[in-house]
Image 1 (spheres, rainbow, N blue to C red):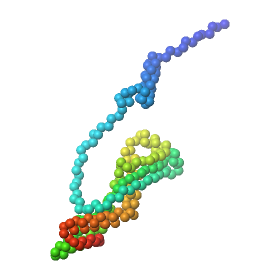
Image 2 (cartoon, rainbow, N blue to C red):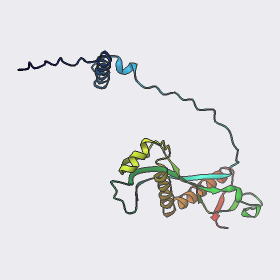
Image 3 (cartoon, rainbow, N blue to C red):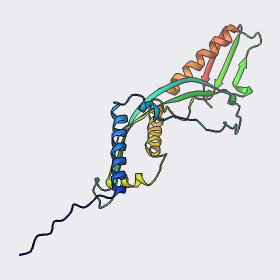
Image 4 (tube, rainbow, N blue to C red):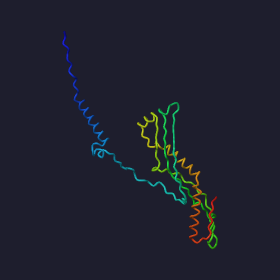
Length: 220
């Protein structure tokens, strides 16, 4: 009859104990920071922002002779969806809901007024002005009032974001927001308001200079 051999418990290597203890300490440490149960640690390991941008360079100077007579504030909700052929949205595809807010200015270009467009009588009591029609400026998106409401991405798109840094991820919806704001400005009465305000400005200015009769018209 053979006597069973007793197996001694396997000893854990010393390096494994050290690694396990270190992992446990790190887990407790970061959990304390996360839950703010260890005072002072959150401020100690907080993030700081440093602006290391270079100085702004003047590229060009352009003389302006236009009178900005009106400005419109617009807001649009952009719902942009991109689907992949033959793949479900959960695998490949994006959908972004974006609120874009911006302004569009309406102006009258006084630099296009020629000598034949201004007529003044001999005793300088009557003046007739013919001005070009008001125009719309380029839409300007306000980054402080524009924001993404939600972003839905497929699995492949999420994996791609892990290995790439795309600072222009919202560029497509921003361009779309600018286009919609520009279209809304064209359908508004912004240019009509600009012409009315310009006429009132010139009439008040010329009357303050002694003109009793001022006529302002628009056309080529």
